[in-house]
Amino acid sequence: MTLGTEQFEPSRSIWELPEPSGMHRGYMGQDAPPTAVIDVGSGSARAVVMQVHEGGGIEVLAQQRMNLELMSRIGPDGALERDALALTLAALEDFIQVCLAHGVQSINAVGTAALRESQNASEIIGEVGRKFGVTFRIISGEDEAAYCFIGGVHGLPVTNGMLADLGGGSMEVVSFADRTLESGHTLPLGGLRISNSFRLNDRPSTEDAAMAVRHIRESLEEEGIPYLGASGTLVGSGGSIRLLSKLDRRRSAYPILKMHGYYITGEGLDGMTETLVHSTRAERAAMTGMNPERTHSIVGGALVARALMEHTGAGGILVSGQGLREGLARHPDPLPGGWPVTLPHRERIRDAGVADLVKRFALRFWRRGPRRANLALRLARTAWMFRHRRMTSSVRCAAMLLDIGSAIDFYNRLGRTAAVVARSDLPGYSHRESAQVAGMLLVAERGRLPRQYRHTPVLTGGDKRLLGQAAAVLLAADELDRRLPPDCPPEAVSITRENGVVAVTTPVWTPLRASGLVERWAKEFEQPINVESTNGYGGSV
Image (cartoon, rainbow, N blue to C red):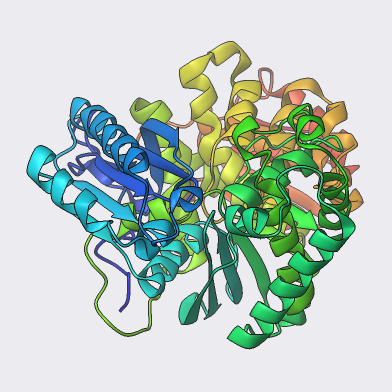
């Protein structure tokens, strides 16, 4: 099964977007009613109302969550306790009300590991259909793994590797190559299940922790989870993974606030796991960033994550802030049998995601970004002579997004855009690339890189050195663009290199007003830029 052009991939690049027909239209001007997903998991249940755009980007409109602990409420007879059933139905009623209040036309409601194992889950299916008219599905482990892949890997900059979705009752593991799912496994290694089974809820004994680790390792070996090594990326999703990442991220200066795309190193995961294992539940609750509802299950989740990393030979875990629910939202219909499931190429997702973000914040400026981005791309390539490809891509992205800041606060638009980039999901972009985009915007505004960007592991020394030049390119593209008539194509501006100097010929130019541009360029590149207009005016340093 290919999840391709109709649902996920835009039919055009961001440079060819048709004019939107209204402020409340969907991606690329098409109607896109919100969708809702209800996920009854082993630890918690959640309802999320989402707007899914044609390029696959997701905008969360509403969310409700309730801690149910269903994996802990299955009795000796294999059935859910009566009060657990009643609480689940009450939660579903509340969830459905929230979904309907947001104009949702269809609700995709599913149950996972705990309900797969309970003997009386059919009562929930019947009651939800009878009382609320909503179809409730208990999905198989194979389908859960596929939905997790669709949701978790879609917006990450990865091509080959393995995804592990670590839930409360089970862990779904899928291997993928060239963004195509190849195999899937469901293991009873959820964080809550392991914590309950080996008495890890409070400070565990050395023996209990060792028994848990041995059990996890044996389960991974018996299931045949393959070795990954350097051949791909280990991607992790699920509540335990996200919480571990949140705790780890607070250990150092880190400018990107979104969790999606964060990378936990092996050293970081080892240290966090040791800290959690040797802490009481009360001590865990006092940790900055800890979710109080996960203090009893996080040790089990940490041990599973670390054992999986060791088993696969990965150097760390790339965190996905998305998973099952986003997969269901992107592909709401039941999955047909058999593989493969193929996701769109990363470049398609990047272009669609950037265009979508601009339209969400600054629809009235939709024409300006592509022209400015074209100018920035050509300036960067000419100035750097086609080197620094990653930074060049980030310059183009920053130029495309600049109007977001204009829509929020024109006089502080560079900083406002940087704040949105640091907080919002940019599908297909790594945290390093997001930090490059936000960093160059801040350098362009302030003339220097803020402290949290200078002292962060997410940027390399080479990145920090180039950001000043990137900011000069961005400002030059903006100054050139703002003087062009509305319908003037970017190709009307010629950008070449003559005797080692960047030479720009543009239809309209006023050197008096843009003198700061050429001065800044000379400072950052240590060589002049020559700008001339076809009407005879020019300027250089």
